[in-house]
Image (tube, rainbow, N blue to C red; front, top):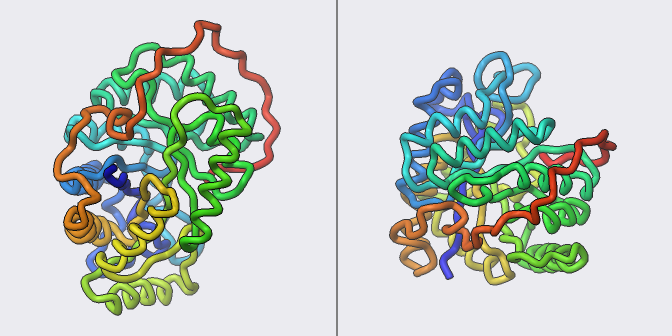
Length: 332
């Protein structure tokens, strides 16, 4: 079975000082051409899908706040809609708030139509797991005819409680192991959450999140990150493992963790477009040489590529009415 591979696209990159990397222009992430170029590069590498972070924020391009940081970003759904006609096979998954189920359902269904079945949804909610699952179910009930049937729903899960939400409501879950043993523990916890939730459909696709700084020589990648850390005034850390090294070294890690039960990986380039190009032009050929990654796209829809059957639809019950929700945990 081929490995699944995705990329998380966020501003100038995953490092908060990525906009200060050599050759970077902090104004570019507020242009459509920038995002089109990134997604076309990911599609050239035959990645399964890309995710787009966040909603519309005012200010300069980039993200985060404080001295020496840039502000603002384009709306993730609008980015996805803009690049959809410019691409043909890669999946497009925006991160969006789930405040209005009706609005989200229409937004994602529209993206699915214009992309011909390549849309997905990454809900951002701050709710109890059961309540968050009810929100997703409400949205699913409003999808009555996109090309996918239902666009795949993905979410990060960094602890047992979010695993419960993913088991109830999602198709793909992003986890953050630190090593092979941690991967086995997390995969077992996800499968236990599926069993506890009484999940009857396809098993969750479990992807590991990794932040990556890639170069042909490991010292170069580490040096790039160190310079950005110095510019930012603090060492960059993440809930996901931060990998600095070569594509060859990353292949070894990917194959090792995959043996622990993972279905795929979502890679977060530390600096864009540099580390995305290193994924598509360095990592992907090495994975192909090992016989674990595709040479061409097969299924046209995102559901098909992920091996998810098209749902027959819900049981016809009307959408559940919305109600006040009690905040407890946040999906980043």
